[in-house]
Image (tube, rainbow, N blue to C red; front, side, top):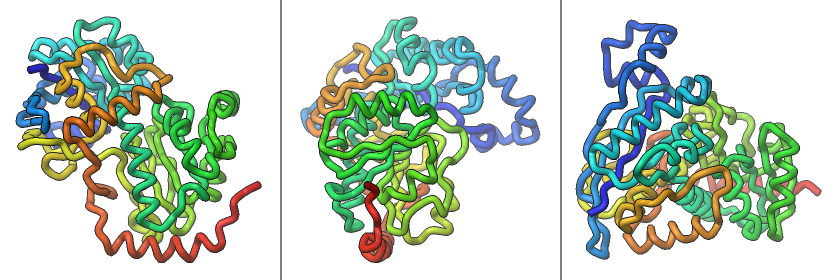
Length: 362
């Protein structure tokens, strides 16, 4: 049996305080420097993953003792060294492949520098994240009443590893793509690299892009939210793949006319025990976690989803392997709550009214 590990990290010091209450009295300016000197931690053991093929796997969650802010703002060599320590702990536990969770997947050339320094396979999980993000957005859009082939989709963080492939996969499935990022030159290069029937625009202005886009994939590496309540069109559907979240929680509180879904919630086959509450229902996981499990079930211990240029063929391959082993999208959740039929019906009504007045830009 090939086993796996998956690396987690605290999104903020508040996450650490929930697990270790004594740290609540420490200001961030003291706590974060302390974290740099704490070794990676075994968080929990994962058991019970069983494929319909009969293959089985199990593994471990390993804790990287840095926050999101540290992973993005510390010198890259310091963050890379910490993640390498996590991978080495995973290998000591018996893992044949390790997944990089959240912002650990951004550090070290999006996994490449990490993989070069460790003796087990490494993946960011981004290939299956792409597959589920696109499927999730299109599925939710259909439920709400949008017709993707006549709709505009904005991709926030379009030049990142996930955003690029989402754009390429959607280019033949929607009428228009709006690629959003910080650097216009990189956006224009991406637009030139995309083959498909969709009309493509680029923008460095998130609010402007959202004002013409009823469908949205949000996958930036921002530390703070970038989508606020009144940025979105009535009836809009947003798939928020980013961790930390791109979409402000105020959207859920103030915009009953839009649907925000969490990207990539996947049902895992078997009597799975994660022995950790990360905000999902039992036996469900993020797609990036699921990719690591799928590869372990396949006995795959080579590197997989690394770097900033993911392959569409690899996205399709991991989606096929997910189907083979019984992984599938597990319904929709929004800000850690299940999306019910009443919510879908409400947003559908707003979307129907709004679609009559949507103006598709020339």
